[in-house]
Image (cartoon, rainbow, N blue to C red; front, side):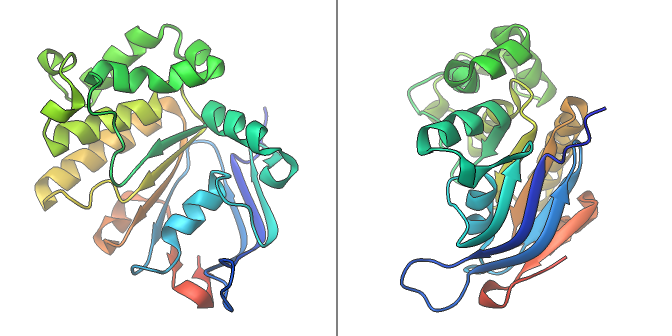
Length: 229
């Protein structure tokens, strides 16, 4: 059995150009297949920066970040984009759906950018339908443009898009911030249930500490002074 961590971080430091202090400091972190971790902290504490480092969008000032045993620093910019498309599903705070595409076509986008994700899905359209149904989006909505959907419906489409093709790592950047408590809890159960079925690791960023009960592990970021596991 391959026991290579999905995500490995070591002696990580990141400092924005022109700044005197590190926005992220993290000594060691390892996330295995199927594990889910909460990252929380106040605004400006480096939560989104850490996600960008995990996804290879940013490279560390010092230290190591690797995904599936591959160091981001050892890849060219084009190779990082391919590696990210193959192995990372991203659920954005602003959702970033293409408003003119249907819900179904938005879900299928990762399979157009990654042959590996398309192959792992078995049949992309079939898996897209399965995910949308499992995330409780009614079939009559699948053909509607994303702009015609409610925020809650769009979040389910965005979650299905992140999960299609069984990426090893799903990154969620405050996707519940616009939801009330009831809808937030319902969405969390749907998302975590699908991550469990897919066997993917999950990093979930929020400022809402009440979500900690949903997660096995947590990291608290406090800006320039670093992080606490």
